[in-house]
Image 1 (cartoon, rainbow, N blue to C red):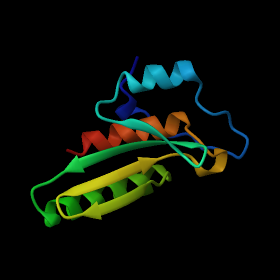
Image 2: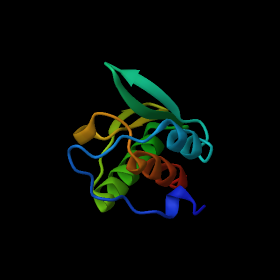
Image 3: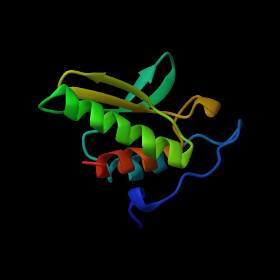
Image 4: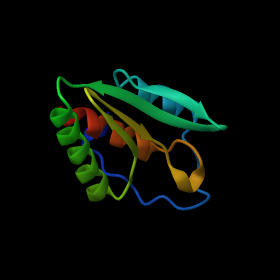
Length: 111
């Protein structure tokens, strides 16, 4: 299977199917340190990255924003001193789609 980081996001429409349990298991096996969280009944994919300074965290945040714009798929990003929390989910379908796992892999590749 091709690495998730080398795939492109597909246009996701309202009503597109959520990732299946089998797909989620397959995608998660390719990601390190990511967690699936239930937020008000909606699954989110989240990871916290650690940095030595706020400037490093801010630079990483900017890079995540740039790949999000390239793929037209946007996360929630919380930038703090020494850490950045990145959360992916697909708003249009209120859950996880293959795009979220692709973007998680692309996020990891930024380091």
